[in-house]
Image (tube, rainbow, N blue to C red; front, side):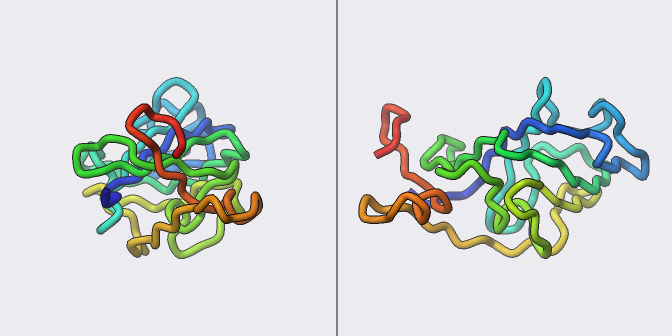
Length: 149
């Protein structure tokens, strides 16, 4: 299956590290796609468009996640097909044009939901032959029951 989207479920430590339409978001009430204490966008990999982004909202996201996120690749039907194996943020996907050092999600999103400086990321799957360190920075394919293959 070809990955089309990345789904993010990241527990945010400091909502006020985001600027939404020019205002600091002190408690996350301004941030689109917030669910409880988590930020949960789905991003199209080919062009970096955040799905269901409200038209007219501009965001400068700089969220500290620190091992409190889960990330999945989705197919064209938005079914989960792979899960990020590591504890860290997949920088290549969620920090275009900068380095989040595995602890941050850093995105600038325009009024149309387009992430600035986006480049379609390369998806690298782990294989059973990979050592544990290498496996942590790869995607693990899911089987039909939702477990790792």
